[in-house]
Image (tube, rainbow, N blue to C red):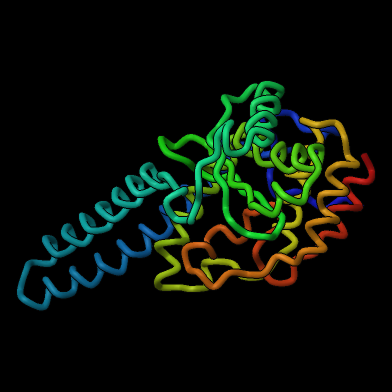
Length: 274
């Protein structure tokens, strides 16, 4: 039985009729987060200010208008915050830029896959860690960027590395990375007051999104055995949740999420059907 995918229609069609990410729906969803927080903050502050003005003798009409102005101002701040959210995220991780000299194999694969899916080749960064993993995020100038661990470069075959990079590049191609960057920016702010805003446990919704990402990789490579082998190798080197608060924001978005209770069995089953 297929897992229900949380992402919808993609501008980049996925293999097998699987629905990918819908940029318009994603934008509306994340905008609702910002507006909801802005509305709640505005109502609380507006009521508080209105009551205080009434207590000091300001006429009721004026205090009401002041409260409404505060609510509107909060919503404007929320809209501006949404529009500005998702800047360069590479500064939040300890990354080393890669190029043709430092990682020729990775750079060659990124260029080839990008040409296949109609994407301008993004910058690629190295994260010095023994685990096998990769991450697509927002780079300088709000362009997509790909992070690859040193373990992936050292332990994967060319075909396995191609599958790993293809998965992240398709996320950039579909616009999903921009959506995720705004979600992370939202969680970075809200998480200061409500730690539960930053997920720590793997969920069914995350599994559905990961399966859609896996199918995206297959759409670009057309070679399921490489992705199956990649998942199996990554499973052997267990990915552990991080304690770094900045790094935790990216936890759900890695190829193998840096969360508790992560399982790959259903992802393997889904891929095997192709």
